[in-house]
Image (cartoon, rainbow, N blue to C red; front, side, top):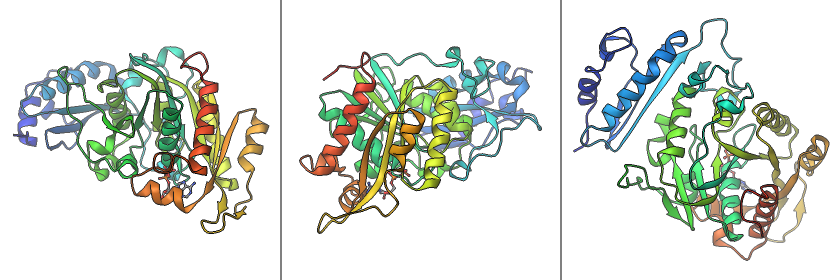
Length: 380
Ligand code: ADP
């Protein structure tokens, strides 16, 4: 039987705040989401007291996780910045994040964005390289690229995982056709779902899309940390992380706290998107994550009937930009019906049309990524 909000509140009533008040009376709890044995909520405190609250957060999470019927418990510590020190407003694509600091950042005095190797979380045991696929804004085909790149890496003989951290619009369930809830192993770690030979995890497997949409920065970080560390990834050469679009606070914190070996930036040729891509480059530079390269998606239009190429967006902008910035250019993916229809039907093109031209393009991009990761993952 799965737990109710009321049962969770009863347990939380037994836990005391740093000032000795029961959590349920301390006026710090967010709404509690409890469905299907999955419990999520946040503890919202003043940033100045955040350090004292971290152990309470952990205690609350452990207590809820130990309740019979609970399969997943995620408790985030949300620390509001004092007025006047708030972060600049996030770009529209990340418009739901706010000027808050994540729980993970409290252990370290560095604000998000301050480059500090100390603020990086430990590597994930068994995973040789974690790489991010990012974009400066939504809708450029980042998730489609992340999945097909993961499949391209698989085709190079690598063991690959995919983590959908696009909390604002987890699309991996749609792109893979996977809808099941992950099971727990004996150590109560989530077992990633498997499809196309990939180990796959998405926040979309755990919560309804609308729930994820209203999460704030710290909740995002907490959810992603849990998907990185409370998941039994097994042995992987590469774990591809599909990042939330944009370059706001939540993205920056993720880039800083996920132990990334590098990042791939997806852009479309339109100038606006390239400006956004440049922001993405700057973001990874700030947190000392090497940019493995830029991919130009929807680079040119390829007619599905006659194969004629049309440069409807003034193709080649990303290659030019990459050269200017001294960042590797990984490849161009056409705007093509087959990529859209296979993607949206849960049969990504690299898997469903392995001998076609698009699969070859993604494999070439995967080869470029592998070259960039030389020394970290098995070479050709
Ligand atoms: P993002 O993750 O950047 O929001 P998605 O990967 O979800 O973007 O892609 C947005 C839409 O564009 C989806 O319908 C997807 O199928 C389509 N799409 C992505 N790349 C291509 C492409 N190269 N050709 C045609 N359609 C594409």
